[in-house]
Image (cartoon, rainbow, N blue to C red; front, top):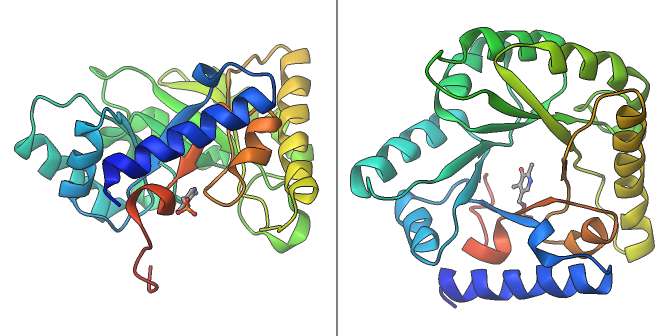
Amino acid sequence: MSIAENLHHVGQAIADAARRAARDPAGVQLLAVSKTFAADAVIAAADADQRAFGENYLQEAVDKIAQVKVLRPDLALEWHFIGPIQSNKTRPVAEHFDWVHAVDREKIARRLSEQRPAQMPPLNICLQVNVSGEDSKSGVAPEELPALAQVVAALPNLRLRGLMAIPEPADDYESQRKPFALLRELQAQLAAQGIVTDTLSMGMSADMAAAIAEGATIVRIGTAIFGKRDYAK
Ligand SMILES: *Cc1c(COP(=O)(O)O)cnc(C)c1O
């Protein structure tokens, strides 16, 4: 199937899941995860009206963003960095992206704010939360989230938009929902403390419906749009 057909099917699946959860499908944005796929795949998706793209690998992403700009200067795309960030690699992220989803340390946030070019709008930030306990190494612990959120919300060139999680894979729907429900509760707790955000970045190809049932506003989908990735990546 073509990328355009895949996008159509994913869009239908999002709309179905939203309706089952009594939510407006327009409240769930599709982030097309184009990591490992070339500029032409991005352009094919953009020609099917997809605007937001997610990337994990910094050098690959920076090259691809530049290539797409050269090939198709007419496209106004939104680029989201969804991979882990090393503190010595924050500058290209601050310079080339519109969103960053996996901020989990104050040091990274401070550098992103300092390095965001003055002529660009604030960088949209999601804080990655470790919702699966000790097994997972990335993400801020839920008890440390309020302090981090307070710092990030105050940084001048960042805009704190919400929370992101990558839970441990689970096969059944009810187990999939639990970590997403936790993320939603954490967002509500922040709001009660005066830090109001509008984004829950949660749900991938395998657990999208559960994430939407728990309030996802961005689902990050790769395989179902672009096909299987090279196993090495
Ligand atoms: C690769 C990736 C995705 C997309 O995963 P699929 O299973 O291909 O849909 C989503 N989120 C993150 C953080 C990823 O690294």
